[in-house]
Image (cartoon, rainbow, N blue to C red):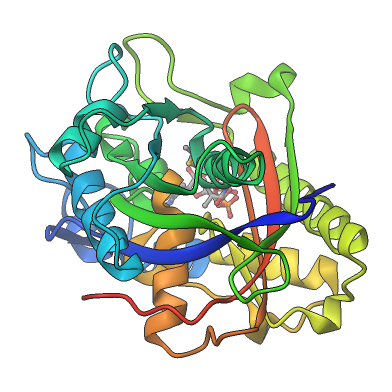
Length: 323
Ligand code: ACO
């Protein structure tokens, strides 16, 4: 667990975007040997948003980025970072084009790749750039069109995955103020790459049961390290906002932590697993439901391909989001 020292990074804006196309479980069941009942009971997912052909990760990222800037009341930032595992092309990174389309040509812009943990890696990187004094403001966007990696005949992965984007603005501030990012834990284990992998020119492959077990263990341990580093008790945490992998995984993490499951914020039923967009989309859901209130203690956690995992603690700021 790492703690920021002195100058802090503060959450100043939040924006999200989902492609309009919705694929319900019943629609999947028309083409695949599956059912709404199986998907809902095994995953908690009712539907997912899927980008139309020709709509890329950058397109979704631009919309979320624009909304995060509006939420922060800013028209410019010092850097744009994009977490994605499905960039618009393998070279160059997608972030410079997103920055350009947001009217931010000239500022440093680069991609971060850590699959479903991408947003946590991104927040940690952005907070470090601010805490170091290098930048005053950063725009951080998590966006994926991971549906493009799926085997169209694979009922398991198609049931889980959705597309989307979410973004935050961080600004320099004080550690004591609402919105400050306070504790960070990140990890990886490349020896287990075969649990979740998109091989060259292949489709996404997953060992579901092993992923399930690892996700519960890694997220629970990561949250525990952050809590212990900050001296926060589990009871003092108002909201756990996990990467939305599977409703049963989220329930198991709360159970392992001894956290009241009602304190977990989840929107998986509406969006599925949106990879790097998952955590900011869940945060936006928490704001819309008026569950996240200024000063609340919030812990984010995630797990994904790599393997990668992490957790970040913050207090919630007084921010509003646009539709
Ligand atoms: N509809 C109907 N049946 C299905 C479906 C489906 N959509 N998907 C799988 N099944 C079948 C399986 O083929 C299996 O059939 P079999 O017994 O005849 O072989 C049966 O259901 C049971 O499968 P299990 O694997 O035991 O089901 P489980 O309860 O473990 O649920 C699941 C599977 C949902 C995949 C679960 O293991 C899971 O959520 N794992 C974690 C997934 C995850 O988080 N992945 C991250 C992906 S994103 C990323 O990393 C970028």
